[in-house]
Length: 331
Length: 273
Image (cartoon, rainbow over the protein chains, first blue to last red):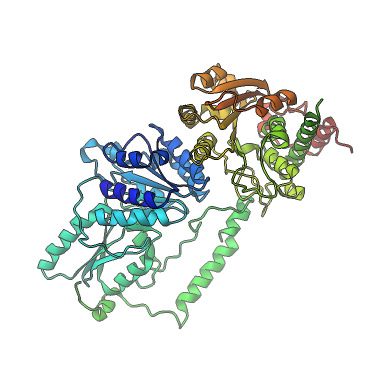
């Protein structure tokens, strides 16, 4: 994936002279072509990730589109507060790229496993989070993320991942890529788990099980509509990610389904709705902005209940009933 | 005294008066640290910075990143005094629905970067400065830091970076008031020899009295101190400067002046009753 990334980035940089690449002293045999082609727009800041993130934010404030590149947790967790304050809060056009997502650096050990990054990056307001499923998606994602305003996180595997998409699929940030449909089970996968998921689906199909496969490169903003549609048509959704089951793709899917009535739902999540509070004031004042005062909580509960019980609301059906009307098909 | 000096002396006095009124009204902390940079801010805004108040986003403006974001009261005061927005805004400092938070926060005309967590500003400044170099723009970047944030490793990551890239358009100003959150710098984590540290990292360093307007004007007026190197101005200051009972007092990192203290303080600053 890293080769697909750098080759796409070179094309992007050739077309857009705002594009910079900053590395934290990593990227041997990967970043050199970029450095040679665009010496004025390449910078190795040294082994200093907090500086990497801060410099990227400052540089972006001068009108540049800045990619930062390192491996594993270094460009994310090591400088998390700089990402939160300096990049996300300033809505800076900084695109953080990590190579070695999941356990790609296997035997190098736990320090090199990026297995909480999706959850943590996803929790930052304004951050878009993309984990491409194969080299084809990597190339498309690199171009897409460069064209988006504001911060982004691109989580790559390492090298030698199999090409799953033999021709480029339609790719939009925030949209699922449906490889196949099936009404028994649908795998929803993010990142490099796509290839094993496709193989698993083939095994199950040989047993006559209806299997769907969805690649979900964008973990945020999340394609809730696709998940709802699959849930309507398919008995079981299995999320697959090389990442902690807390906070990543599985959580994103759960959050969609838990809010859906009739999918075991009936959950309303009150809190801070994925934003920073620009408003200034006391805790009580800010809670009121977020709908978190006692009066507001009671009001919201009543409204939710009324909506749930109103005659116009969608009729709740158990999952099994819905499947009967679902078509059995495989793309 | 040159007219420039007279003007900045008066601006510094006004900043102090505003800081005291703001922190009193808001019940806010950090009066002491705001007072220690009043003179530096007065010289920057009164004489040094190339800015246009009517066009805060002017691409070729000098940038000031206030890395010690807790001194927001002084920063908001000088921005208002410079004409970036009406002084009535200062009455809303830290109040519900205000635009002025207790730490320097973007969205306020003239503010370049939101700060409040220490050790972020110098790296942001490095990014702006290298952006200027690579785009062949002539603006300069000033980063106003606290002594306490020289404890942060990230400060020294940036301190290594700037000389390596010959960022002579970057000026770090350390407000060396010798008191940090829980005690004196000497007791908590001694920075000495501070000037030698910056020199060893490759900066061109000048130590000055951070309350001497003539010296501040001279030093900040001639940056870069050396061609091809970033400049570090170590401003020896007094926490709480200008109000006798606040000077050198750790407590004024936290306390907010009550009505009587405000009256006394304003008297010292020669505000007509």
